[in-house]
Amino acid sequence: MPVQGIKAVTTARNGVGAFILQCKRLDFHYCDWAGSSRGMVAFLKHKLPAIAKENPQIEIRVSPRPHRHPVIKGQYINGREKAICVRNLEPEQIVNKVSLLKEASGEKLKRIKKPVSSINESVRGIWSPFHGEYKGI
Amino acid sequence: MKRLQLLRWSSSALSARARAGVRLQQNIYRGARYQTTVSPAAQSENDQLADEQTFPPHFSSNPQQSKYALPSPPVEAARESAKLAALHARLYLPSRLPLETLARSLVDASADPNPNFNNESLATLGHDLLTYYTSEHLLCTYPRLPLTVIFAAMYAYVGPKTLTAMAREWGVDWAAAPGGEVDPGLLQFQRLLPGTELNSEGATMRPNAHQKSWRKSVTSRIVYDNEYGEQSTTQSLADAQGAQGGVSFERANATFVRALMGSIYLHAGRPAAKRFFEQHFLSRHLNISELFNFSQPARDLSRLCARENFEPPVAKIISETGRKSRHPVFIVGIFSGKDKLGEGSGASLLEARSRAAVAALKGWYLYSPLNVRVPSSTEEEGAAPWKPVHVDLGEVIV
Image (cartoon, rainbow over all chains, first blue to last red; front, side):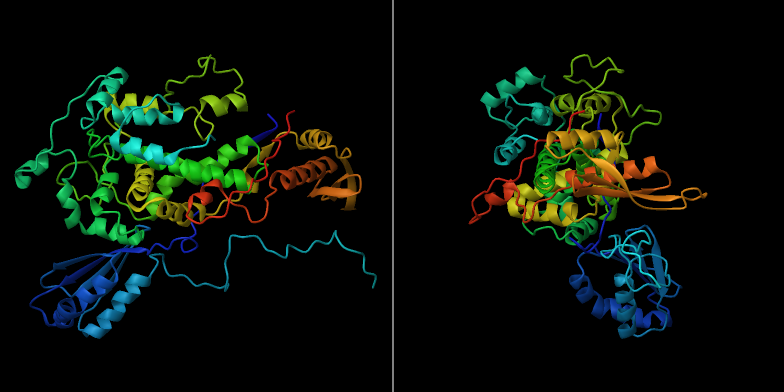
């Protein structure tokens, strides 16, 4: 057998072909009685239908959680969850929190030091001391 | 990689008319034998293929009570599932693909044996489409790839492992157990029982298949084995289903992705299916030069040069350092006459030479013509006439 094939699996590059939004579900928990949920209740009544219409790729669940502060939880494709407590927030502030959860990748936050990261090898190549003419000093 | 006639196949997957066919159509046979809505003529043909099986009819009169009796969610539940609508939107599926079909493609044959409600026929069509598009892409883009590497690349693009990873990356969740009351946005399949033998080998047409120690030539793998150059296991798993009633997680996910491809083709047409393939499958990263495993590259290269009437390859040291030190480095080039075919570095002369030979062979095998077109691109309306692509002699035979 002159040459054998090695089994491999292709790696995903989200956004190169199709883009899959990583946030797959948003859970909204609120309380009907408590004052800290006042902004959340107004948000659910007036803002949420438009947001749900804009983002059909996110499953949205609304459920009461009596005697607790209001919480938004985002479920992500990588299996992680992000929760934000929105007590005493105005509806406009909650909209910002929702867009934060929507745009998150679900990964843990980490500091990115290099501006570009790529799986392609460098076009220029790596400098080699063994090639090229000898330059006398 | 035979020329496939997809339009005819899609009709057979829908109406389940059986035809005397080749190895690739054996799935259609299995789907066809359960059908009850075929014409009498086709029915009589089917009787010869396999004995009839009857299934309890789906109830729809009283959904609240009968929901728990159903093996898979009722059709009308698809419109009420938020998960299903979200999945449809997340994948940017065409609006012509209804939610009901998406729900059907999530039901495995192990969950619902009724072929009118499971994804088996869709998966058969989708599998044929996926392998056809992938193989034409590979053969036209890299006309000189050895066949074993083509098998490996096919496995990497549309193999079950990749399809499973894709289903996970699409955010498809699975139900713990199938049933009529389950959300139709979840993948439904019957789990394998613990301790089930997974790698049971199925029936094959290969003569002397019981001789495990005999060498399998590449040519025989084209004829007898599946598109990944492996012995096909579909038949054996179907038998296992009958006995134990379950499929592996990987197989259920792969079947779902194939069924989705088939349903896009049926509902939205060929251009949409091809776009979906390019965006989700071809856009994934695969470095084909890492799929080669040479055993004797220098010998292969000399055979290749003899076949192509090049001058015999000669290895020459281009540069070296520290020959007598603990860490010597040699840069060796392989020359055919005045042309440098390849170059490699290593800690010994032999290592550097074999790396140079590997580089030369990869340079030959990974040749890719510019502005390559695939045969299916001529199927679009107003497409330019087909110009033949480069067809190579093939790999060297040692």
